[in-house]
Each structure stands twice: as structure tokens, then as C-alpha cells.
Image 1: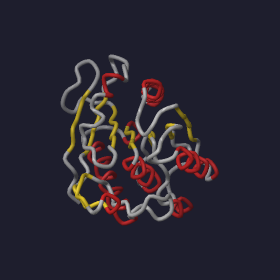
Image 2 (image 1 turned 120 degrees about the vertical axis):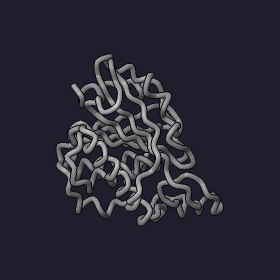
Image 3 (image 1 turned 90 degrees about the horizontal axis):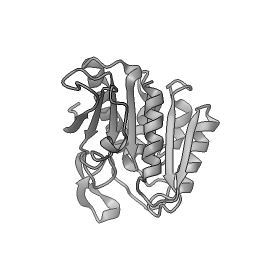
Image 4 (image 1 turned 45 degrees about the horizontal axis):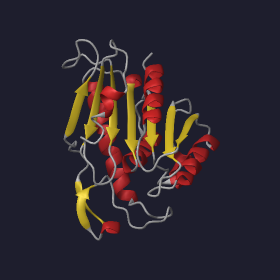
Length: 224
């Protein structure tokens, strides 16, 4: 499978080339691109000696049903506005395989699987969750931001370890993906035996400074 083009940022003293000790692969939301979360990296204020590689892939261009079939960057098609049946399951699985390929590439570049974090916002978060459920790699953690479990029926067949650190966050004023969708998804994961670190903030479909600070603390713990 051909991997998507990516934007990459390395952090930490002397960060260059294959010197990273950990990787964060972060998927953007519908209609955005890999540059969407670039600005968050310096805002995380991570320890100066923490050498991380942030990998921000560009989703492929595809027509999106809810936007009148307009072609845009999307990890999968969205066919309706309600939570049931809105997601193109084949597209999610395809993007999940693509994300898993990016995880494999980081391992090939010398990063231990346990030092790879898979993350995503909105659509990207749905793909991150799907990948977390299926990946053969023992990744270090998963972040799902302002998103939901798009294929809940596949949760019972998940093969990932139950002690995987999971960070989930959502805005209480989100009118794109209601926070209840995220909360219900977190509850399903918890009921299935996963330990979910849930956060909610008074924001819309976005990220906020308090959330960025919480992500920073969580990443510092993962890589501590």
C-alpha cells in the first residue's frame, strides 16, 4: 500500500534524521491537511531533551457525500449526519491500514513500537481508534480528539492489549460531532475493558489551551 505524503517535525535537543526516540502520528480532520496541527507542537512545551518525531499525514482526496460529493481531503466518506451508518466502513478500514503502514515505517526507522503514539482529530480520530483496535504492533498509546467510535460492532473483535493508554477529549459545545457521541464511545471502550483517560472542555469542534496542556502532560507520561 502506498503511504500518504506527510509533514514531519522533530523536537528535542539535537533532533535530526533518525535520532527520534519516539513518534506521534497525528491524523487531521475532514477537509484539512497535514499542516493543520503543526502549530500545536511548540505549544506542547515538551521537555527539551524529549526527541520526538511528529508525523502529520495528508489524507487522500475523495468525494464526500454530505458535502454534495465535493472532492476534499478525507480519510473516508461521510454519508449522513447522524451517528448510525454515517461512516464509509471500507474507507475507514483502508485508512486504518494506511495508518498502520505509517506505524510500521516508524519502527523501520528505529523507533520502538512502544514509543509510537497514534492520534487523530475528528475523522482522523475515528481512524486512530479503528487502527488501535487492529494493529499487530504494541504501540505506546492512542489519542482520540473530538471523535467517536465509528464502527462499534468491531469492538468485540479487537485484538489490542487492554492496558493501552488511551486519551480522549471532546468539546461540550461541539455542533459537528456532539460530545455525547464521544462520551458514549469512551463508555463502550471502558465497558470492553480499556482504561480511557477522558477529558471534556467548554469548546466547539476544536482544541483549546487546556486540552493542549493535558495532551502535553499525557505525552510526557507516555515517554517518561
